[in-house]
Image 1: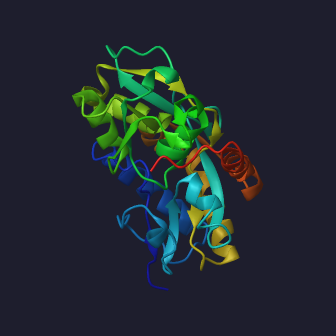
Image 2: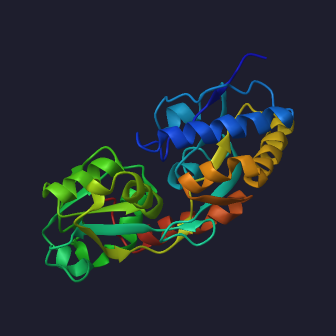
Length: 270
């Protein structure tokens, strides 16, 4: 079988990329030992989004939880959820941080009324929909009472807040932790104003065409890679401490939160 596509797009910041490549080198070796077919030597970088996660030759990737329960449901296979050793994480759950500049005169969410928000993408749980969970005080007549700028990425949202182009942004705690660790110049001068409720973290998925045998092999390979002492250093560099073998029922909390937002008439912000 020809090699298939593997990607890890969700935390693929340039400064983190060497660690991600080292993790894949070890993980892919464990996949092959577990009998998984068509494992590529190198990661592909097709970008994040439904088009890449639904590619017919996709073997392995990591997606956002929001598309998992919407566009990807029933079309990919959930393998599990990483557990990160980062402030804001709780096992396989994570949360978003609402960040502002350290000197920004706000003591809570209500103080963001009339300000400017940077949001990475409309289809992002951590950058968009998680913000909706705490934005009730900022909704006037069914509309957000603040300006919204579409930044394109969490890193760009951080840069916008730090430069003053935006007053606040929502991003997941793992992104904030990794950027604080590897690119501290980006997060210096920022503070966390509020934290959103925890939700299941970013899922690892197998492509829709992957066989049950290869799905089981990847789960076996993930377990082995998490136990491999030779990969301890790279796991630490990524803040990766475990993987919980979740099922779609675990992501029902995210679907329920979306339904509550609709019931409360908290609209999409973009």
